[in-house]
Length: 239
Image 1 (spheres, one colour):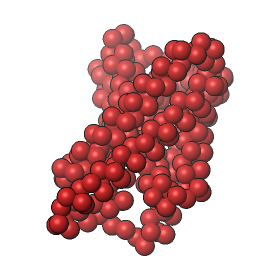
Image 2 (cartoon, rainbow, N blue to C red; image 1 turned 90 degrees about the vertical axis):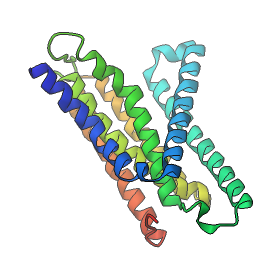
Image 3 (tube, rainbow, N blue to C red; image 1 turned 30 degrees about the vertical axis):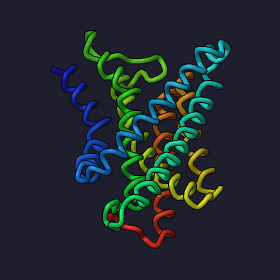
């Protein structure tokens, strides 16, 4: 019973908030669902390219310090590629329709839905295997660097922070890409790098006691950056 309670508690901690955002906002409109799925696909492409680079460049296989920044930078490249694909599709739709409400989207709605797609795919790919393996053994698994918190729950806490961060960073990134704003783009990359590099603390004795709080700090910075972006965009709202 305790094992299943831990499983369901961890599952809801990691996936319930982002699932609620999907159901309450994204799932209400077909266009947003398509954007969400497309963004998830581009996140998966970035992960595939990062895995390929890791496989081809042998020294990376023994260097977490190099692997994490490279993987994060590749994800940011695919975030930019996704934005460009979206803009091209946006222009194409406007050329073939005469109805103004045919594509009733703005950068807030599209960036929010895209961020949800990135976040869902990250949660499924990076946490799904941890969650699945938690029910294959007996009892809760612990690590030497996080001896006081079950691995499956510690990972759920990190996943929750990262999904929040993904949605917020996508809002900031859309603003930066649309206006070619170097500060916005730099903020996205630096916050993402900060959250990723904080995970390296799991390699030493402080473990999750430091890495999880730092991940939430990165998520808070991302939310603050998104809030400032929306405020400077004249408080754009969901149409």
